[in-house]
Length: 80
Image 1: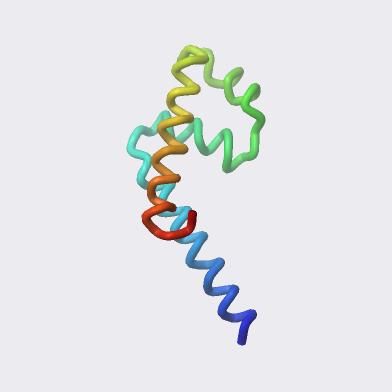
Image 2: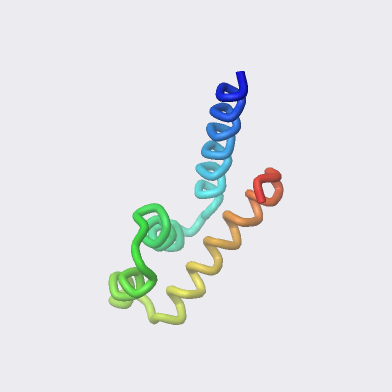
């Protein structure tokens, strides 16, 4: 019984995390966040990949926006 409850809790958390990613409205921010966190790339590799289209500071700001969006949703959902 406890395992089933824990499994459902994990499923709920995954759904909320997916929903948080969907709240990122800027496609470029979403792509950078996906590259950095979903694909588990190092910060340096993310910067190298996207410096052709944006400066390092812009990429870092976009990462910050994406992380803030996800964190706010997870706070509202009670996960963090």
